[in-house]
Length: 437
Image (cartoon, rainbow, N blue to C red; front, side):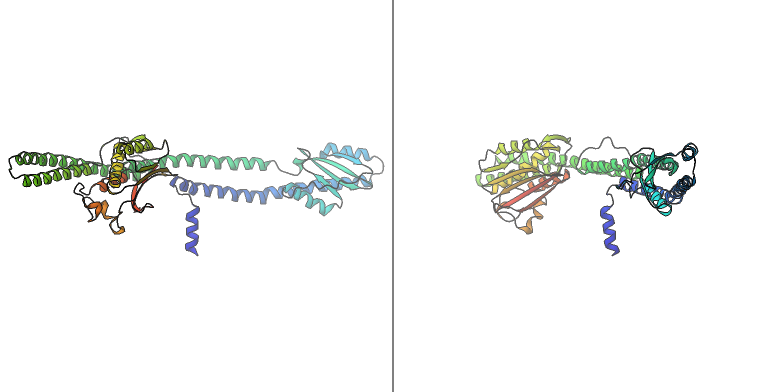
């Protein structure tokens, strides 16, 4: 029971830290204001209104009794009550009380007035809405009725409005101050999260500066130290690979030159093929290691890039479904390299290819379907490993060293996306790319 209640509370609670903190501040303030208002309304305002209404009904009853026992100057009695008790009294002979009910069940004034009139007078009718500042009260008398126009201030206290104003304004003021304060406190956390997200996508972070409370600044400084260590490690790796590239290319070039002096053409051709394969492996390895390049992030037309890449192959068996003007913020050349690797594989091992692009609420999806031999489910995770080649038709060619999918996966993940391989509707392989939008 408590577990289910806890899950329900978690679902209805805000997800962001700012709104949760605001809830912690605002709920006690609003709750306290409601409690104070209810106590005031019940113990002071309603009781005050009840006493004022009872006094008014008592004065009306006094007038009715005095009018009934006055034999000579009844008009003077009306003038006397009008001047001293602020009553506007008019006797309507030979008229009956209205039948329409003008009472409002939700109005405290109407409820209190009805209760007091019912306890002291038999036949009555009143209207509190036709006049802005007056109550139209009619009491049955003989063959007609008396009409009393009474100021509303005689039955209600104006202090309720002042109290409501003074209790509402401080609450709004406190909540406004809390919003400003919480914005300043959560902004450094948001900046740290954005910097982490950018760094996770491989983008350069130039304008990040830790700020905020001591704990948040400490987390920011530690993140900055970690970022610099990782960048230093990547730079050292690139420098090391550049040195390896230079050192290995030189002996390979000498070996190529020495092949010309070998008289046995068959042995010479075999050695030449091995050297070419070594060069290709070296080039692809360097390309894989440098896939997290320092290319700047830019906003570009992904639809146009995909169409240009497909058009380069001039393959009539490629069917496309690419909507216009879908923009993506990323590293254009790396995305192009990823698409080239995937399309190269499809063209190499299949005859018919379908490529589609669609935009969802928070992601962009690229689908590349072919009718080739496909990949067994047990091998799907392995093909993303560097230099991994399966002993089937997709890995039989010596022209591949097993880095195409590794590079493609590394590029997509560096943009915060994901790539999956699955069974294609064309009975081949489907490469599904998710890019965050």
